[in-house]
Length: 67
Image (tube, rainbow, N blue to C red; front, side):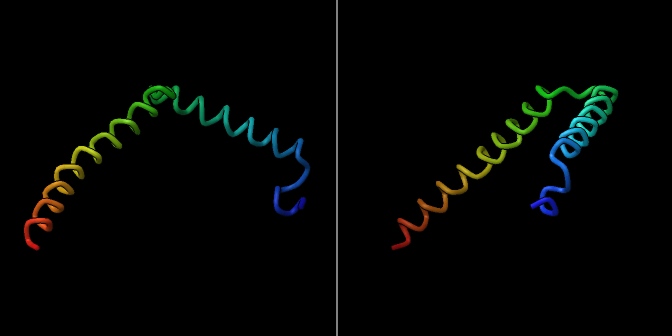
């Protein structure tokens, strides 16, 4: 189990905390915030949904009438 989790749980938590701080500092230096990242993902999902919905409606309409 130690091999799977990477060693002592306290050391793993310490490593994760340090990595999180480093990533946070880098993102702050680049001007990103957690809200910006969440909003970007939401916009991407919305755009994909908006592109796929009319195409699926068209495809289902043509396949229904082609019978």
